[in-house]
Amino acid sequence: MATQPMPTRWEERSTVRVLEAGREQILKRSRRIVEAAYELLGTAGLEGLTIRAVLQKTGLSRRAFYERFADKDDLVLAVFEETVRLAARHYGEQIKALRDPMEGLKLIVMSVVLARGNSDKDGAKKSNRRGIAMSREHLRLARSRPADLQAALKPLIELIAQQLANGMAVGAIRTGDPQRLATLVYNLIATTVHTELLSHEGDEPDQARRTLLAADIWEFCRRAIAA
Image (tube, rainbow, N blue to C red; front, side, top):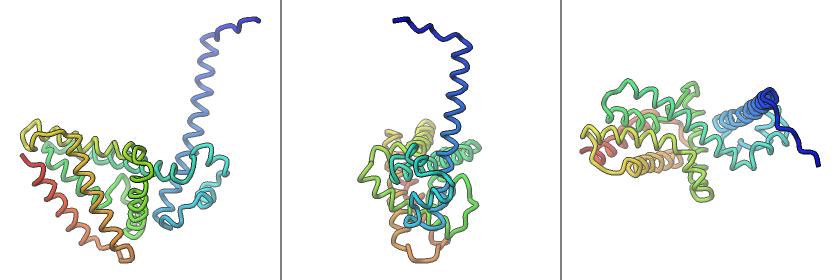
């Protein structure tokens, strides 16, 4: 049997260009699906997030969906991952101007509780509806797919851990394992916010109550981690 010749350099470059172009096209459609799911959670809640609704919103085929996501759970995890990634990047940019690690931590904690992310264009009702939906899914995925959920939350927890490590370095925060403390801080925030959202699910969004809750959570965290 004749041996196939090794590809030349131009053939390799040509192959790479084709693969990169194909990958970008795949990712572009994947992003459209995730963005549609994110929007549906705000406008229609968890009940409105169906594969059919996503396909209607994107104009993509069912085949295109299943080429990218195994099922609805996979899509919800993608929404979590993208939301957390963008939020962590947004908070990271904001805290660059703050020299005090405690102030950086306060900004992160308050922002997470008040649902301030990369974009604040949504109204209170839409943001609240999405928050309730994601709280329900957060609790469910913590049981059914804990490793995947933790991977999605990693950028935010690592950002908190870095601020804690910076605070320990200057003596503002008690010595400990930054990653463990960051996980404790995040779990406190998440559990409290889930309880707040789900216990007032039928109520109108109350920004004053949410702001007070954010301040209380931060004060609790501050006293727990202060040196």
